[in-house]
Picture (cartoon, helix red, strand yellow):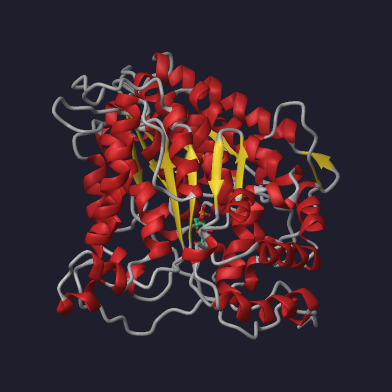
Length: 560
Ligand SMILES: O=P(O)(O)OC[C@H]1O[C@](O)(CO)[C@@H](O)[C@@H]1O
């Protein structure tokens, strides 16, 4: 085992450790009053707006975190990644998912070779193939066009493409391109999942894409053999050539399986499975469903974040800030943070040295207000769990009913704006007494607050923004390869005692205030008033960016 200096032995780490004592004496209620601090904790890039002022951190904390990043040679590590060095030391490989979405004329080397032309050869091949399938010039064994696609794959060969498909499924532009087509994903080895996947599909009009980096994964290969049987028993063995294609780095095994190598779409060992959505793994099934032009926008969004991650100074670099805040929350304040469990669920440093702290990471979330009806009680009252709230300015599918105070999206966003302050401020016994709450209910309705969160506001959820979000999370995962997030310590697992159902009460009172404000601003141009600096900034930005949304209800319904 190699010996190494762990980051916890450096001076910046020790300084941060000492600094936690100062932070423990603060409360977000007071920190949020410091306008200069809040203003410095807002960053904008390419339409994205990040507000991390509701983290239990001061400007001094941030300075100390930047010093920690220097001690961890973060800038050099980022440069090493982009220049194709073998920063994946366990597999002795480059980590070059950024090359998958680089512009055609970019130069990114791996082992002395510019890999960008290879990337574009495959992208061009996907464009050509998907256009043929979509316009009906590639037909199945009985001459019928292939309108449905089943993508078989698991782990990274499934989750990324499913994420993008889920987000695109309601994007009006993508919906137009997907008319008459279906994309399904088969991952689990349970035969029930096969039954669900093929239900209602006709082998004559179905194309199966087998996605596997290694082409050896047990679940994927059994599912692939099963669907091969489904096709050949209905249409004869020769139909496989027309109805099955593959995405893999192992083209020899693809051919052995019986898929024509001409119908195989390659990627490379420098693409980690969990970052592979921007390779043929995601690009092929998504192009078949939505057309290559939509997927190209997704790749451009991702590329924009890559450039930002590489070049922006740490204070303005959204992925770097998110990563540093993760380290601060988990390794210093002892909170379980937003982490990536597959990449970072490890117990040793990059050199194989056991970490002198726990590293078992837990990540969970829910869309919209669902979480408020399941686990937010824990977040408000139980252990401290830093939260990331991601909001969208313009809904993909606006609804605004006559007789309603605000549109459905404004209703959703009222919660987006209210929750972070509910978590930060809590509710004191004094406030409750002033509100004439009965004495015996006060312990149940009191919330300590001081719960960290950040708010990320995106302009909309189109293919480009989905690419940005995907790359943002990918950047965080790639910290693992740089041995940064291995600093993370997660404390989780003690028993949780939940006895009160009063959480929704806090949230509703704040959400009501936001709803009223949104209505007043939209219908009577009322200025944003009565909120702290951070919420005022976010609300103003939201209202300005969505000012073209009609102020009056139009009984708009979803357009799907
Ligand atoms: O693409 P493959 O080789 O089938 O592997 C599937 C998944 O299995 C893993 O290797 C391990 O879970 C992932 O990294 C990968 O995404």
